[in-house]
Length: 446
Image (cartoon, rainbow, N blue to C red; front, side, top):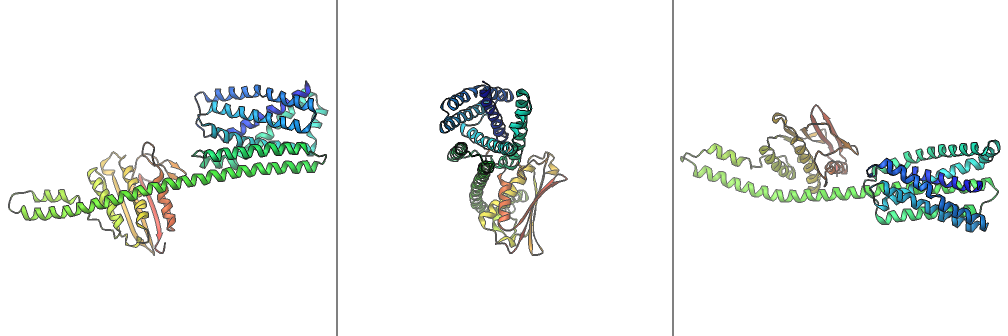
């Protein structure tokens, strides 16, 4: 019976370290109500139920005395306990099965790194033999259990800072089903089979055994590194796709708006000539009528057709919503920026400014300043606006004040991406109630 206790002890340590390992990769997961209670109860249930696969492994090991059969039983037992932990995660988190499977697999890799570290320590120092020969069984067991938990905590802390914390920056989107299944299958099968082979071909050579464990630990670290790379690449790909789709919508909007503004310009031109010809001597309020149509006149000329068109449309909006828009711009030096990129760049800059100013209640503070000018062989490009509250940063960029979902927050990313595309220096500031987005372009940019 005492021998069975050692088997149970190993299973308990496995479940605890696996649970702690999956937790560091699940910190950002959506949690169910009464999460702490659910988490603790489910893990306690897994610890209790782990005695069943452990007992089966114990019977197979003791009765057959066959190293191959014993290691097959080990694989089955640990897979069963792994499945229990994943199911307990689904009981605690509001996340799909595949996402729980992936974080459980990552926790399994961390557990194996810990086990390798403890195995090497014991192999080199004979720690367990020293403990159980020098102390009573309860004391040796308690101290060994405590030492394993301390080493596990140190290993998991390192895994958190090296892998989990980095992955959390990019794990905004769940991995694809194929990637999730692949990384889980490869990690589980590789580690379990490698462990079994290491046990089957175990030798009396300490250095050989240490080398095998170091090799397994290195492979686990490699898989964790690969996961971080995959998550980051997926994040960049999806962000780029969303920004590209957002840019396409801005460009389509610009094309439609340009056509509309051209028609309005033509109509305004005809109306003013009609007023001038038909209103003479008939008592018509000529100044009032001219002011009414002048609001549609695209009088801002910056030297860049895209900026002129976008400014004309936004000027119309600002004038009807009590927003003072001032423009000091010589954009003739920005011809190196393509029409599509300029649509996205200035379209997002002016749209973000308008959205922020809309939140300002005091009418005398509702203002937007556009400043574009050549400076020492470069082009200074900025949009400045008043704002209320405090900007919230997300990924190093201010988060939009818009409500709801959609593409909110991607405008600033698009601005930065286009600025960097043309070797521009992007910056932003929020001081004294004024928010400014600035870009300094080299005129030699291509």
